[in-house]
Length: 266
Image (tube, rainbow, N blue to C red; front, side):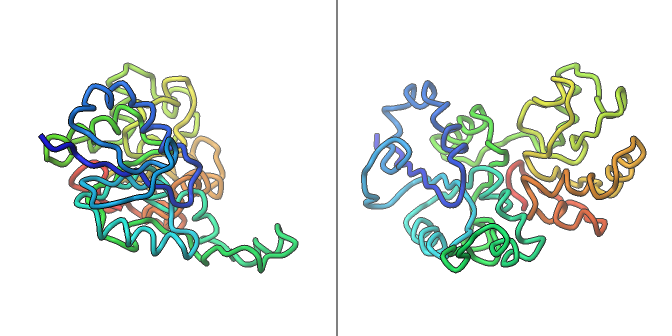
């Protein structure tokens, strides 16, 4: 049996999504006879040669070089999967999209002309066709393992397409927003983290981006009702996934576009 050829790529990012892949090492070893990792700079120095069955791409397109790189990866890959908030929605780098990025450079750097950043930080799907988008900052290792298992089986993954609140309910966790008045983005945030923060008594930080049909204006109104200033409520959403459409337009009454399969819609 021919082994599935896998490549893991990094654009503008912190490497956290690649670490989620490495956290799946036991699952990867279990299918080592079916999977060949041919490119993964985080763990090995080897030039990319030949075609790929699956490419996992972490990071946003924030400088000119990644534009060419991601197109090169797309040309030689059968199935391209983006990993995490940067690849899906521009990441924290996309905060500059909401302001005057050049003014930020001038304020921070003594020689801003040396910084080669593009005017905007954009998701991979703005530049090439993406077959599947895995959310999170970073994605949960269990979800990465599910994606790889699906690829080995020749199918797209089937992850839950729901908000974090559903994960809270399954875990039997009290709603921090209703019970304690703690600001929480869970009602508009895509599931995938296992409701990690709310189960510890803290509000969701929207790491996994907008949930399907998220009622962003309703959540902002609720956050205002528990004492959170509107600007702070908008800022809560416009941080990790700042360039996701529903969050990007939060201060203008944005609403998330419907997604039919977990991880897909932007």
